[in-house]
Image (tube, rainbow, N blue to C red; front, side):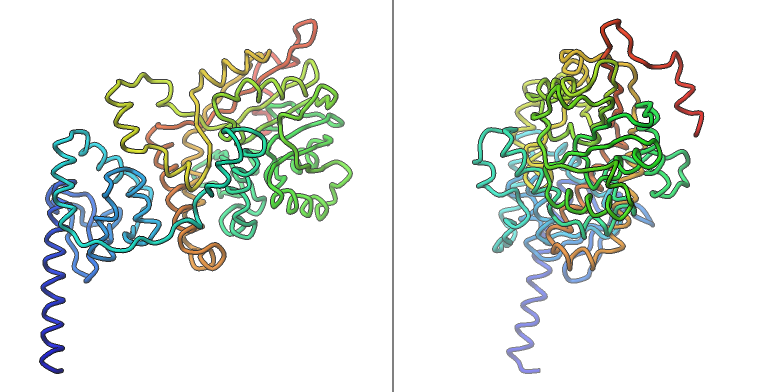
Length: 455
């Protein structure tokens, strides 16, 4: 090795030592000394700072000296997320456990003094050119199609989320391709078993009967309508705004021999009319896309399309935090922290979770009677863990299909959602609604015994 090469190598070692010491100062400011942290930190040169746990739930990996600068400038939730999507940082281990990092950092940065101190530390770190993440974001031109929740913009948002590719979803969903909360009678149930149980629970709650006309709003790949037609003898229609979903759903219906009793249409829920005349309607995981301002229109559309005496099952995620009052300081911090920007930018464009009372109020305002409400919060956390585990196991296949950035978006989104359900930040509710007939009859038994007779 020449003298120049030796000097260059020595310089690189000195640089790494300097950069690592600056990174350690940032980490200490945010999480305390290494020995106090519940996780390990591995640096780009392979050195590891051990935390308090002999078996940490995850290791935070800094892939390059500029990782923390990218992660925390500006100091908000979106920067943290984008540093992971771009590959500046990696999570080795439980992504669900690591999803608490953002909240922990946010708690440390609630004072201007703490923010100023952190920025002083961060600006001393080396910088780097940022990766282009445009391929994973909801495109700007789609946001210019009109105000939120106009039909054309809703269609673009739905297509952004679901048209990532049927092959991608097939990698980690159950064989029935049910992309919603499963129903676990036992923690040992497989995902396949739990999804079958969920489909059947919905059908039992709706008291489906042979010959009835059944509509599923936001039908996905047709799992529920196929189950209802096959096991309950109904004439089932599903509607979606995703062309990819509709194409595959129709193929599956044809293959299952259900074409005479099952169909899927590209249709917006706002176009439903009284002439549609359905006996029973479901909407599974659709309300998250509707938005608070359009809840009255959403429920009015379902009410209009439902026959008197019919039932409507609304199954959707709600935010527990939205119902709780926030101080002026909390509202300012959330804006500064860019809370929910990751979901809006990379996962569910224009989506906004609402509070339970908003859902109930809009449903009753449309004329519905609330007959039953059941929380499946723990079930959704379990479902998401199955999905994340399956996605991680098929990482190479997923990256080959959609690229590394999109793989990272989905891994983070689903793991963080599992954490949010586990810690009661969000909930999932099945709300059974009735449209009483002219005599006030809702055609529901006096007890719930029939729901569990088959269980």
